[in-house]
Image 1: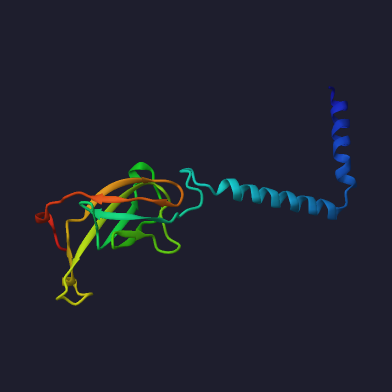
Image 2: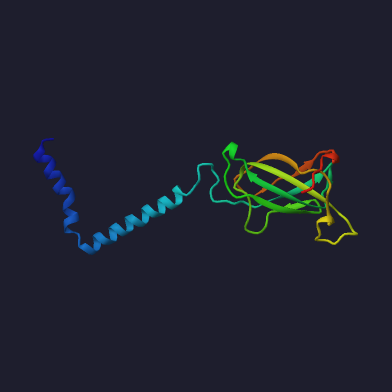
Length: 167
């Protein structure tokens, strides 16, 4: 194709744009911008770890030597060393069950988990520091959670009580 033919082809292709009114060009550009924006929103907002939107609700059971933990806490922290990101999560354990608070959860992936259980003294005031005595030292483990709502159970093995350090 020589230069003259190329110029003629461009004129032919661009002719409808010249004929199109300014209003039509404006709406066409607006539609193109909206489509581009939607594409970026749908495909650009997914994180590289495959987590989608998260955080995802999490629940499960927590036991100590196979028996339900009556009262305690479970903490989830993303394991940055394994590429996990996101907010930390703390949930109460009551009668062996835990559930993330409404609107909270984990982003999935590798998590550092810490479980604490308490013996409630009937003679102490409920919210005083002496009312909660640790059943065992804080138990630490890891878990890999899916990038969706999940149920994850934990069983704390026997731990020597002499290692308990009070905060």
